[in-house]
Image 1 (cartoon, one colour):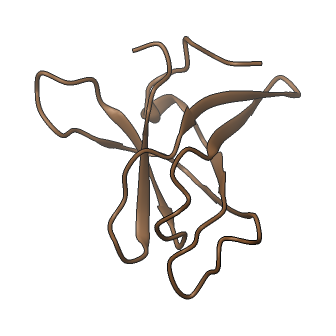
Image 2 (cartoon, rainbow, N blue to C red):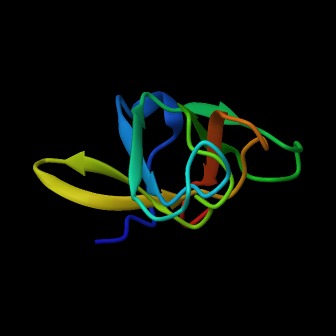
Length: 97
């Protein structure tokens, strides 16, 4: 289920991002995940705030889904949209905003 009304980062205790990172040390052939408590990333005051999590996935993981569990149900709440060329963090939009 896609959650187009996902809460702000401060209201979420944990979420996971899945993807197929292709930049070294990865090869794009295996799926990896990162699970973290989300923070906020703001690129501009005129744009919606994004979720941000610590993650070691590299380039190639873009588009991978971000999920959280709500009352025993897994919900899609974001997708990997940006991150640095090297590892460290990923960010994705709050779907519906």
